[in-house]
Image (cartoon, rainbow, N blue to C red):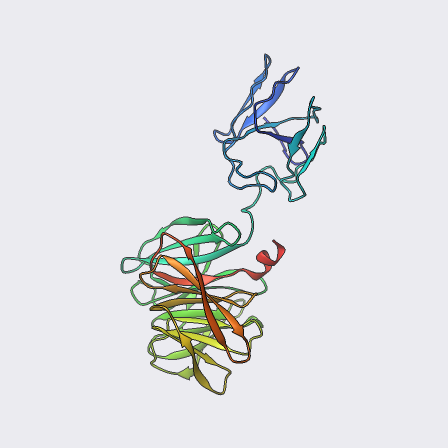
Length: 328
């Protein structure tokens, strides 16, 4: 019933409102519109996010008007484009988008279900809400995940329990996988981007590798041979230290020496460094993503923090999209 919702005023009410003349309302749940000519109805809108100033928007009434309306007493209005929430008499705020993007900073991760079934999910860094994205990828055996530091594009690496062992994929925000190509190694256990955009990985039974991404032809090169069973990798924010998880051991390397940084609280299969020097770790058999706070960057001293509860207990990779999260 609306050709273009951009620019239409919107009002959000904790209680249904009655209007003096006919209005058109849109029900976003059923994607149907109706025109009412009697005492106006207000349709139900199922919110997928909360707005500043509202504790919980689920179930609140929403109405969309072709012209701004004036109300007899103060109302709370929210600008879904991200502007501030105000409480004034008859202040009209215009939308840029009627259905906003997912709120806040989303951390991406991948769960290994059974032998080789992979489920991507997100964690809202502000609310800690955990949400599955897309369907389960049967037989893909995704063992590694990271986000490009400049583009936020997600890259995933496959293990060997799949028809495409050692292959590299991109992952979109809906959890859809797109195959890039074969790395030439049998099993990719970990991926991490250096701050300069170079992709590094760990190939099981082979060691540390670098991977060249398209538009050039995909190519992986072995830079440090090793059969140590590393399952998680991440660079620090300066790109001066590479951290590696092997069972309950956290190792660090400056490119010349390798030393143990600390003991980990369980068999660790995923690592990710956040901009504020929080190290996220995924532990096999543990439903929490644990974080370790780096207290002393010079010595690499750590202190364990609280966990982020999830319904997943075999997290193989964690990715933090820096650009998107910096904007939030």
